[in-house]
Amino acid sequence: MELPETELTATKRQVWNAGRAVGAKRALKPKQIWEIRFYLNQRRRLRDRALFDLAIDSKLRGCDLVQMKIGDLVSGGQIRTRAIVMQQKTGRPVQFELLPDARASLLAWLERRGGTVDDYVFPSRVDHNGHLSTRQYARLVDEWVTGVGLMRNEYGTHSLRRTKASIIYRATGNLRAVQILLGHSKIENTVRYLGIDVEDALALAENTEI
Image (tube, rainbow, N blue to C red):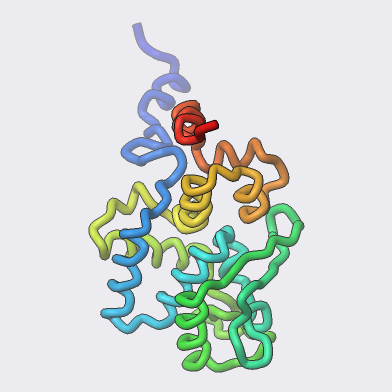
């Protein structure tokens, strides 16, 4: 029995996720963070090191990260210890901290980059009036993770967004704090984003003595 043409076409069409890893990308572990920093330092890639550190500390989506301007991070010639941005996806502000490693790498990059407070922190190499594209940011992340021996299909830009949030949650179990840091409007979104399951909940309970 012959299949109708429409069904035959459907059977030949490749599944969209064939050969791809689907689901949430893995967060980086502390050891992997330092491996990537070492990798970038060895190659003297100031911009990439600053971008990586800012991505880890800010916990921002790629679209918000690449659109940051120098004035968002600098005050009085110094890198701020805290910054705030308006999220493109939600239209809500989110605040984040900048720790010494990130402040040092950002300062080194901005001293080389130059520019004014109205310029993008990470300009496009094609259009210097524009910012680094999210596609280029994703390509850079692929390069960084493969450079330290990780599988590129297991990591992505959301890995960097999830990394510090996951570490904080594992250390404290404070889901509400992580929700605020990620700028999620609903705690259910944070639960899904971190991939929290029953095992996580039980592990936290077992480590809490009364």
